[in-house]
Length: 136
Image (cartoon, rainbow, N blue to C red):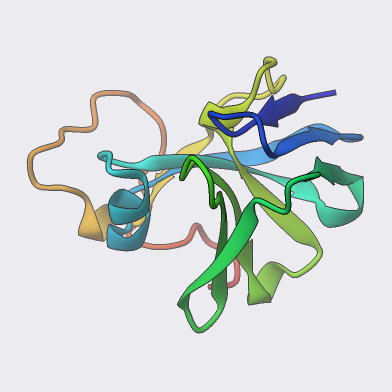
């Protein structure tokens, strides 16, 4: 099952289940948090995520009322995302994986706040905000 870590490897994780619902998020908060045109997250049931953090480096930041972002306080790597409306899941920053997640991105979300200098050049579905049926 997928494994990953932060840049300095102070925080390592692995999942007992596959990543699902991988999306490229273009919201302004993800762009600012990652310093990139978008962030890519996949979800896993929280009970299937094991985090090794022997140095207590994992820090959680509330970026908005329903959202918590987990990052390494040592190297700054963005690792996780939690949304109150989906509290059974943790969302993993796919770029921190050591292994192939076994799934591929399904959509671009929050394209209504996409960076104006970035052009989406693939055929994935694009959603102005969350896709239909996803609480936000």
